[in-house]
Image (cartoon, rainbow, N blue to C red; front, top):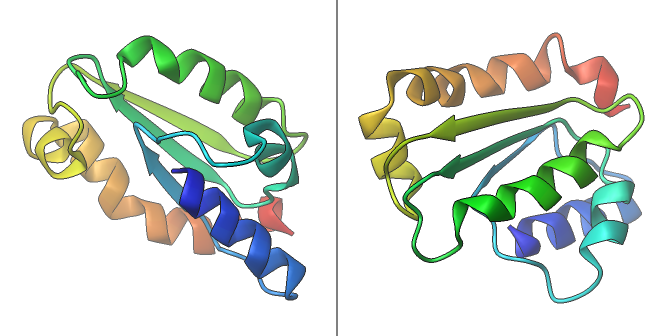
Amino acid sequence: GGRALELCKQLQQNGQAAAGLCLACPAPPQGSRSELISDLRAPVLLTWAKDDSVLPYDGHESWLQELRARQGRATIFASVEAGGHRIDKMAGLDDGLASKLADWPDLVTGPLSKMAQ
């Protein structure tokens, strides 16, 4: 998660931008998470499993608050019951999340693309 935010910032600094970002129970970045998130223009899909033993579920609250504080930027949160710290397991156990992940590229290059500009 933190590395993905850092990459998005580097892309933006080079005149490029990520179309969208999927964060699954993300680890914090090395630097200031708040700064990286506030600079992020891309729509974000954040997902977290309630049984994650690596990064506990309640960690989603601060991430979600900061992501939703970005003015005019889309943030979608998908909470799932099980899957631990693995997105493949989360999606395999939750059809709703699997569908969101499958639709995400179309959303960020279609309806949500205007929000990333």
